[in-house]
Length: 434
Ligand code: XUL
Ligand code: CO
Image 1 (tube, protein in one colour):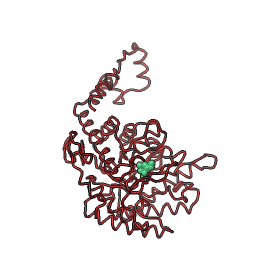
Image 2 (cartoon, helix red, strand yellow):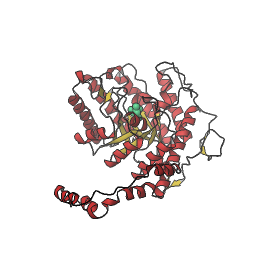
Image 3 (cartoon, rainbow, N blue to C red):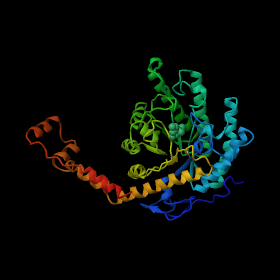
Image 4 (cartoon, rainbow, N blue to C red):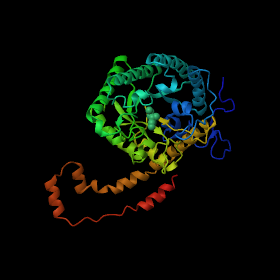
């Protein structure tokens, strides 16, 4: 049974094509810097935005037309598996990601929910075996259910904490069952509304405690995905603890989790924190902690998480340059945590939107590779820091100087002659790479 009988497998046709359902830049087997594009990019499709998003907003009812609705929630969930794998296969995406609640109805009890998850993951496993599509990561949704109103791992209620722990245990069981390569924690409700009633230390200690239980349980069942923590500064909580990459690294290091945890960085979360995407990736790289990427973009005029499909070539080029500098993203990947706009309500827009995102990342990859091959940033930075290659600078870098020796140097020399950055020229030339 096909949900999209009129759509064939999406092929690369180049920029002259008039076919809407074709890649214009993403050519999966094309080799860039010694590696196939698909292996650089490791594209993943997000179950939630693709299968469960209905196009509603705080002022408007659902608009999305989707062909997979059944008579019961469980029938819809089963249809979704079929439709989802058809979409992944036709797009040539080799990975996918999901929350527990995306794939199976919660039912009337936790027990019923977990039984539903078991049944649906049996179907998912069959599809994975048939298609070769792999699980990049799964996660537990510990933010939508009303019981998480005061947080999950950071809750003030010990019984809610137990439910969060149960979801994480189940999440790791299904990660093992499906061979998940990573496991994500995003703390949508792990933050606070007001400090007036919040014990910040207790809450953060408890979050770390849950992470340590997850590491221990993974070891016990002999399944060790790369654990990832996804920063976001706000929304839905007013203040989320994992504000940005640097804050999250401080948490990881403070609780001694750096051997097991890396970062899953999202473009729109970076902009909400007042950073660029490339800044967040660069921070992770400095700490050897780049795990995976959630690809999307925000809107410069809006202050919330719009999760738009990425189409900004400059931003994606600079992000992909950081990925190349990192030596790649595996075992992470590029997951489209992106949703179609409300006006793009037809089911086939799901294909057009992913094609746009995949083409933009292909362009970003090719541009970044050219920048690397031309040593564009390498030469610029080498020259900018040249004073540390010899004489005084080299001695500083070799830890051969101290405050007294530098004092003696400073008082016995004239003020240094500085050089202009010529940064406008640099930006002008950078545009030539797009
Ligand atoms: C929310 C967000 C999540 C995480 C997974 O902003 O990005 O979808 O990626 O829970
Ligand atoms: Co995300």
